[in-house]
Image 1 (cartoon, helix red, strand yellow):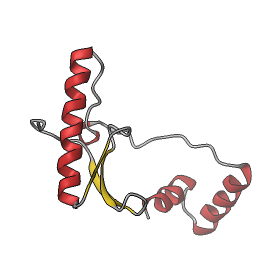
Image 2 (cartoon, rainbow, N blue to C red; image 1 turned 180 degrees about the vertical axis):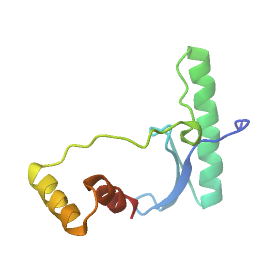
Image 3 (tube, one colour; image 1 turned 60 degrees about the horizontal axis):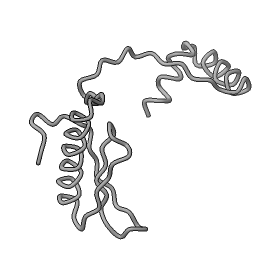
Length: 109
């Protein structure tokens, strides 16, 4: 079973502890699939997600929207220690950029 118009965020990683490839889905962080090849891991996790969605629909649970279809404002708030805030502010002043621009550049790396 696969989903029609499947637009979820999948990835496949190698697990040394399992000695297998692990298929993961960002929107369903509790689901995974182990396989011997990356292709089989991707196919497996897509099948598990489809089955999970079918169960969620039957139970009347909310189904996560794909990250690729969500709207993002470009804003979020983060708390940091005052000393880090001070150091970043000094660095921004020295570089003659706003604190926002400095932090955005650092996060983009």
